[in-house]
Length: 230
Image 1 (cartoon, rainbow, N blue to C red):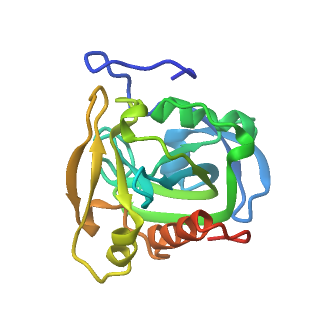
Image 2: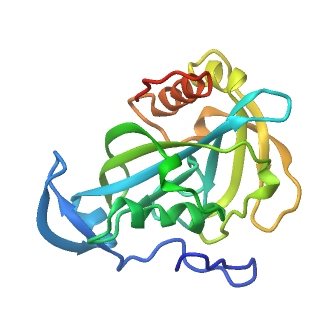
């Protein structure tokens, strides 16, 4: 989907393009000079680059929160699971500034690239789904945005919903101290958020406690700490 173009609920574009070209890289992030389609990369287990942009902020009551997306049920990887607020791949030849297009495409806002706070690089590999070997080098960023959920425009081609969780309850939930966590969710085309309850099986499974590490990093950033990484 082109930047700024939004699908409506009656004409939803595919959740991904299997022919989208990716640069193939090595496991330590070096270019190989080869370009393959998304479908081929996920079939063959080639390393490729991705971006995660996590949105966090403080609500009108002064409570810190973290936002996640619920992936479209039509995604080729982890359909309908909770994931980074915005996630996407570098297309072949793209720079970081160009890949930030994913933020507008997925949730309908245009961030200033200078507001993206780098949290580090994550090496992620999984073979949990039949026929897919997904190996990514992920550039991870945090974007502070205090706006209510109703100010965002989740793209129905990409997201089933955009969700906001209070960090006060999200952190102990992700640490395994609670069986569920409550938050607010807004679906594409909706004008009001609704209350939801999530369990750990709603999230993409990870072996590196990625969601907990992000939640802790968001807490530190919102508290004004200067040096934060995941």
